[in-house]
Length: 127
Image (cartoon, rainbow, N blue to C red; front, side, top):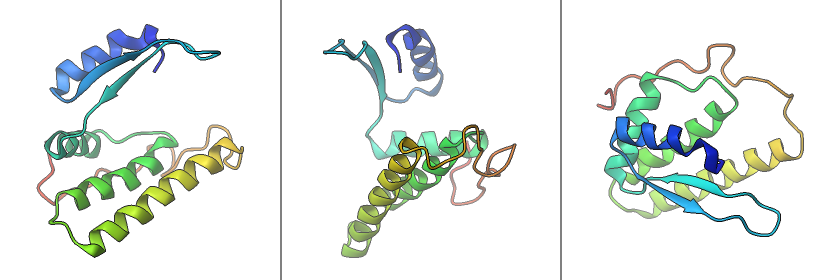
């Protein structure tokens, strides 16, 4: 996010207890940014529980569904099948982002309708 949105990210980090914030200086034509990063599977599962309870109501809901599946896979023991599914999910996420960047999605369209996708129950992920 833009560096001027750091207070919002800091508050989200404090509320959730997840991740760290990293600042990145402007380079070339880019502006300074702040990233909220979480990489521990336990932290990612916490975010899944939060977003399942409070679903995204935007085009990002589609990205979230793919990311969510990857987090659940990371919680499973390593296997060839898991690795292959993670590779496919990564490609799917990159393809969805490339499609949007090319203008393939109607501006303002919502995945899952006006209210976004319904909360996902079960799997022991409720917050």
